[in-house]
Image (cartoon, rainbow, N blue to C red):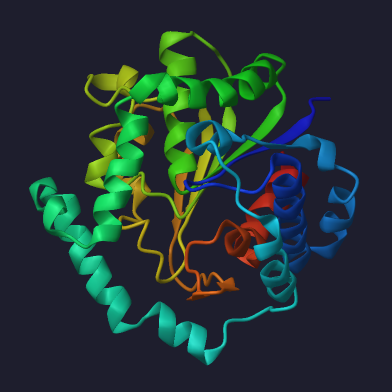
Length: 298
């Protein structure tokens, strides 16, 4: 019987110390599954050793976030089960609409990025280090994931690879390298949360997409499920089934599913509702339902 393994690749920005961050993410994951199926959540309680956090942020930023700033907000999140009317208004506000328009302009016409707000320009500079492989940092980041993922695939473990935000890009690139450069054979299931993979900006920089045909894409993904919360501006294009349709046509992936309506990220921090929080995604019953089905059925 193959072992079930869950790998989580976080998004950008400094994160708490690895062990503390991993336990907090696991807590929200189990709670999300509990909201979908309490009996499956009970089986997960003793399975923490099968959860693996890829701590690339320490390598990339050389700093940690103080976890004490997260704990009270996660406590509040665990005790919150539905979006409030204010949450729904905030996720559909004019600020979100304006931000979407500006980001779409930058995504369609990259020459406009220097004219966009400082936050957008700063993010562009920050993630360019990864795509340009500055000081070999992109390769080293993917190497951290390969150390965990490669032996699992070779052992034919049942793997759910979860990528949040930029972590989904790192996960995708790593799968391409393992498949197309290193010849690894096998399959994993891929769950992307708040992923920017559908953006033109990202797609033009992904591993392999300058090539042609099947070799442009990884062939290690069995089922790909993409979830995006209302108001999450990081994930501009939510239609991965269209963006990566060639993977389906070439038989490289069995299915691609998009879920982008009616999903609310309930995490509120010091700056208000965070539409993109990994904790908020993990505690969602929709995400919990995906993990529950994978844990039970595969």
